[in-house]
Image (cartoon, rainbow, N blue to C red):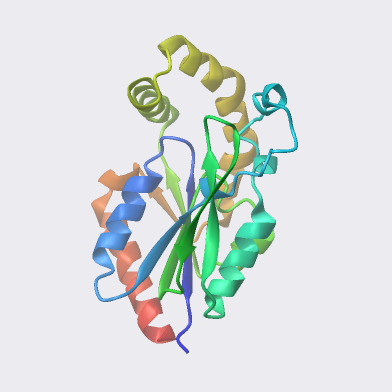
Length: 208
């Protein structure tokens, strides 16, 4: 049985993690690759009232069910297919729907706290932190939330200042020290992505 290469991609909201992830996946031609977003693993909150769910801080590590994520990754490493959970954002709890995942050559775990949990971190063969200036991150988040999620500019800015920014400084930024490579400016840094992809390709070939 071939080994599974696990890649962790972390960084703040709006840092360009998705762009980096897509570039790496596009360049891993000839290998089977799966992306598991950490956002799939927001904790089930069905035991709480809807009003209580509205108080959830999604920018805190406690919002994630890392035990289930780790369990799913271990199964995939052992060649066992898993059912990955999904989240119902309108109800602020886990959805009844799941996503079937088969074992792959490469599994990318992407999320703001991908490098925060030590057990999860130790499972990764490559750890990447996407480092982008705060002004670009807030602008990207502002555009995304107003265009795609129907929020007002005022609500996005208020949430950023009261929750997102302090949580980033306290919990996300410190995980940079665990990264094997730091990619400045996200998906626009083609040189760093090419170097990283070459390293990943060599690692995958070695484990096959």
